[in-house]
Length: 466
Image (cartoon, rainbow, N blue to C red; front, side):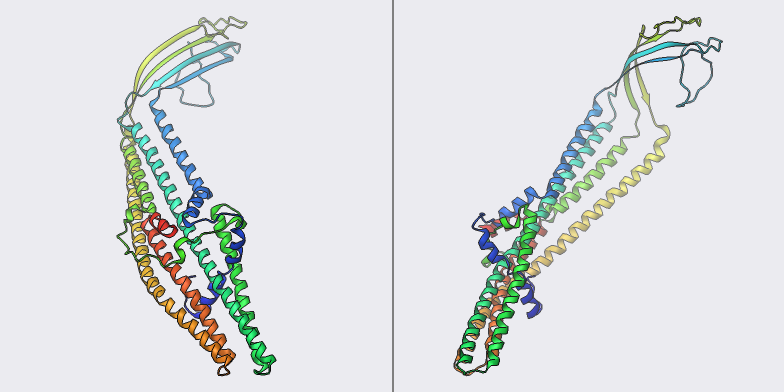
């Protein structure tokens, strides 16, 4: 919006920004105006996408706590009662969800009479050492949290950048409104002068119509500008989480020429986007380390205490009644078990190869982020240099245009010129005033782009708000 390829497009875009001034005057009566720095802080605090990113950090923190619970022993408790037959048979039985296992000796009968049975017990399992597997899983969760935190920082930074850019657009709109209002006032004065001369029959009536048309055109452009600024207000209000009617801004130093400090070296690795991608690399590395710890024996210390009750005797007799509902026979046991996935090595190698590829992918993305940031820095520096040169030239054009209006008006009143010359001089002055205001803001916008690429908005915000 701040770049003008030709006079008509520049005038239209500038006038699209004019609508804020009258609205801001009304807002300032009810609401304290926001500085750029405060607007950015408020957007970061209230915008939903930032809060969503913060909740992702909370979820990642819960993931760390979950991973650490693997160090705790596992305790399983069970209890149950049943009514079933007690016949049994020898032989192999593979795992099945259909055939229920029955313990005890084979009775040699096929009696369908049922008896009560009961069970109750505890099983405690604890893995005393794991060759770093659990610690590597905790490291994965911690890396995921670090990545989520980096994502929050990136979201906040992007939200701050968008808010600052929208704020600049609104300030540019406010300045363009002032220029547009001045244009309407000049067109109105010209119409009054021409109309008086026409009434005195010192000028042809066509000049009065031309002056009236110029005034109407200026008002139309102002109306379009007021519409555009209302839209800019709505956009900024959305970022801030407030009603547009409550919005007022304080330009601060944005209306003044920015300081001509040289652009320093940008530490692109500190940009939140680069830091988030770096966190993604670390998370991928943590997952690979966990895979490397997977092909080790798993050792468990186990202890069990249980009791059984049955309404059947070893000789096949049934006790009847409620016998078996209470677990009357107790047992306990302690043991140490080890397991080793002998044939998991090929699958593990495949998973490690896939994870290594994932690490290389994340590294490539990191290089891509740095490349894009470098390009943005170079573009911002070029824009800043060009905007400064334009801002140095626009005051000269404005003063010359103002003098041209005075001269054209004087020539017209002296009968040496025509109304077309005056109208053209006034349009040139309006465009020069708009260009002058927007040229200064173009420098600020280029500085914002440079700060955004560098990853630190605070120096820019302090410079613009003080």
